[in-house]
Length: 249
Ligand code: CDP
Image (cartoon, rainbow, N blue to C red; front, side):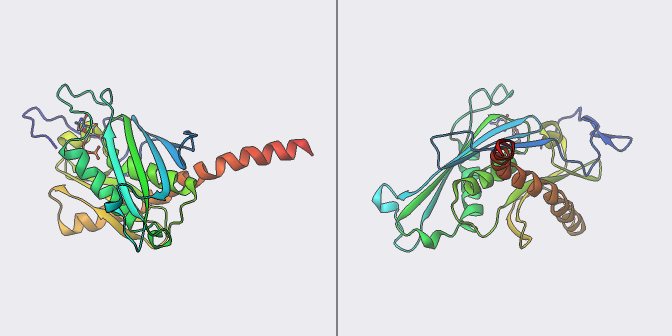
């Protein structure tokens, strides 16, 4: 969120700068398993974000001192490619922000992966942002969820994430970068859709308790769409096989 003196009006006649209504998500497209060498992978195009997630493991946790004799350890690395940002001073690779996003993403998946089935092992999640336009941590979590499901690693739920923000006193879902820069608040949230549990909640800026409540409702509603897109991505390869089979009989 920026505090520029010439702050643009983010909502005009009920529409956002990209034509969306306050409750409208950007276009989301997910492809499951684009990377052959990973146990599972996914590619997400979420508005102008393009993000790849790849999962490796379960495999012996190395170095050995990272092993937990009772469960698998989850390792997560979120990075932005050097060409992913328009910001002149955007710093690609691991920096404080990337370390923070890697940590919160790891915690989301520690809560859903059945880690006690794989003592001594590690499961690694790599999230590579190829093109960014606001909301990359949410899109990265949504994408990594599909990569994990595609790998067959057992999970109790398939999280999705999206953020809600506030601009011109209106709550808006799924902010893009301009909205993120000039909004009054940004609240990225990850949810386990089966139980509706909140798995991650961060907040930048200020929202009243009522706005947080209303924002969470908007996120749960948007989640119905996001979960559907995640599931369809997982089913798509099997549907192709099915079509081929039907054509052969
Ligand atoms: O991406 P997300 O909204 O989860 O995180 P953020 O720290 O609020 O960043 C918002 C947006 O700023 C990112 O999505 C990028 O588009 C942009 N950004 C960038 O271009 N270069 C950076 N080093 C950091 C952020």
